[in-house]
Amino acid sequence: MCYKVDVEIKLTAVFRKFPEGYAAFVEELPGANTQGATLEEARANLKEAVEMVLQANRELAEESLRGAEVLREPLATG
Image 1 (spheres, rainbow, N blue to C red):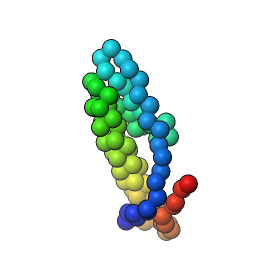
Image 2: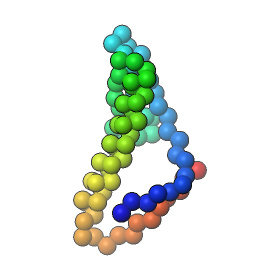
Image 3: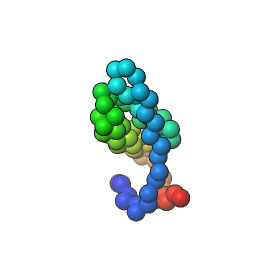
C-alpha cells in the first residue's frame, strides 16, 4: 500500500565537477548518487536514483515486515 501525501519534501542535490563530467548525490538520502557527462544528465540521473532508492527501501521494509502486525500511515514533514 502506498500513500500519496500532498507535502513537499526538500532534498539537497550536490553536484561535483570532474574532468569526465559530474558526480551527484543527495545529502539527506544515503544511496542516492550517480554521475553524468553533463550537469543536465547528472540531474536527470539523480532524480531517477532518488526514485529507485525510495522504491527499494519500500520493498525492503515490506519484506522485513511481512506477516507482522504493523500500522502504516502517511507522514507529513515540514
